[in-house]
Image 1 (tube, rainbow, N blue to C red):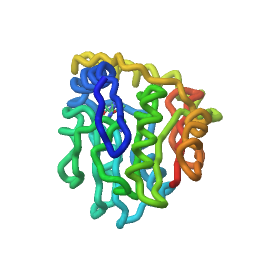
Image 2 (spheres, rainbow, N blue to C red; image 1 turned 45 degrees about the horizontal axis):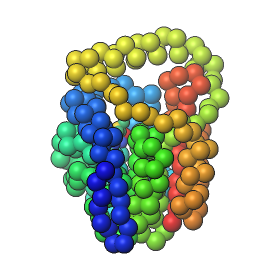
Image 3 (cartoon, rainbow, N blue to C red; image 1 turned 90 degrees about the horizontal axis):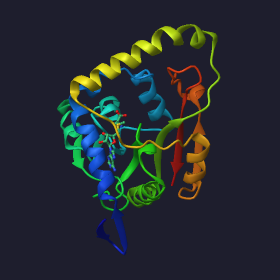
Length: 239
Ligand SMILES: C[S@@+](CC[C@H](N)C(=O)[O-])C[C@H]1O[C@@H](n2cnc3c(N)ncnc32)[C@H](O)[C@@H]1O
């Protein structure tokens, strides 16, 4: 375990888990944007920006930004920063996004207190174990400005439509084999554990850290899961 002194708090980082994350995502980085995801990227990004009430004046941090999914859709003039543990993923954030890129562990964010209006963490909140998640939220609250918003996406129960039932058997096996093929050719082997926290669990955890917490399900944000019963929600913590 490493310890980092930060004001009066000591943040400890589980080095083995950090090494696993880097080993998992480094080979994936060059193919990452070719994986098919069960979502319209643009619509998800727009949903996130709407619920976070993102404006051009906001300073935005994307934690575990990967190859810059959120950063790519932010308005061009906004101040944006992507933080990720894996340097190979950061290298693939396009330069045209104008984003500042920082290699950092989410439990020890290298930013001053009260620096950002909006912080996002997409597709990554369930990578953190319970201890890490509490540290991440403590760090987020520290670097968020007064009235700042923190937004994550999480699995949420959704009611399947008839179209989901009809399309699922045809599309899902194809997507799975295509993504498996990409993993094989990139030599990536994802071993990091994803925790099974749904929207209710994450909402309860957020309540312990933020003044106000709101949860949105897929109907609010239009994110369709590829599995018949899968869906995604968004949880927003307001400071
Ligand atoms: C599933 S990807 C999501 C990337 C991006 N947010 C997206 O939606 O495309 C998870 C990302 O989390 C990063 N990551 C894993 N553990 C991390 C940690 N402890 N601190 C910061 N980033 C981490 C990985 O390097 C990877 O880029």
